[in-house]
Each structure stands twice: as structure tokens, then as C-alpha cells.
Length: 113
Picture (cartoon, helix red, strand yellow):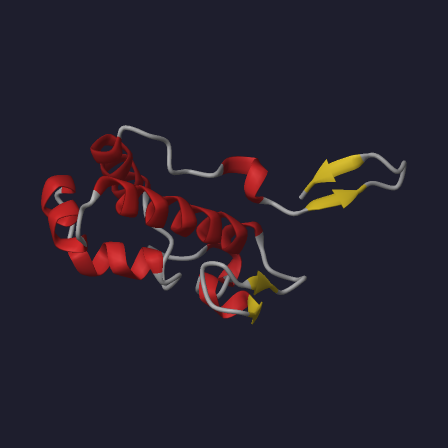
């Protein structure tokens, strides 16, 4: 899937540690934060379900390489891939705004972004 705004692949924004539990660079775009949280959610769901990459891929109608690339932060999944994975696990994997780092506005209030 093409990346927006010329973002790099998500794992390229790692400042320290190992994807997907790494610390991301301060300049990491929202897509990198979403991808990291999504990879963590997918990893947890995969572990809890007992699926292998291949059995998950078969059930979801995807390739195991696609799932592996999402887990490694090499791609952002398209909506179809995300939907198929959520249906198999019967949970929401998309992390949403909660995956973004908190920042403070000029008024001192907490803002997401």
C-alpha cells in the first residue's frame, strides 16, 4: 500500500529498541505510531489464538508474508487486510488515537497528536 506524505516504512522511525516495542523517534508520523500499536495488537491476538502465521493467513484469506510484514513494521495494512484480521480474531486491532503520544497544547491542556 502506498504511504501517505512520503512517510517511510513504520520501522524506519525506531530510535531505540526492537520493533514493535521500540521507542519511536520524536518526528515519527501518526502512521508509525498506529502501525506500532497495530503490530502489538496483532502479535498479542496471534499468540492468544494459537494460530501460526500460515493458519491465520489461510483463515483470513491473506498470505503469511503479508501478515509477517505488518508484524515487522515493513508495511501498513490496507483496510481490507485489517478487516479480514479483525473478523478472524473477532476483536478490534486498529489502535486509533490512543496510540498517539500525548502532547501539551499552548493552554497547558493535554492533546493527542
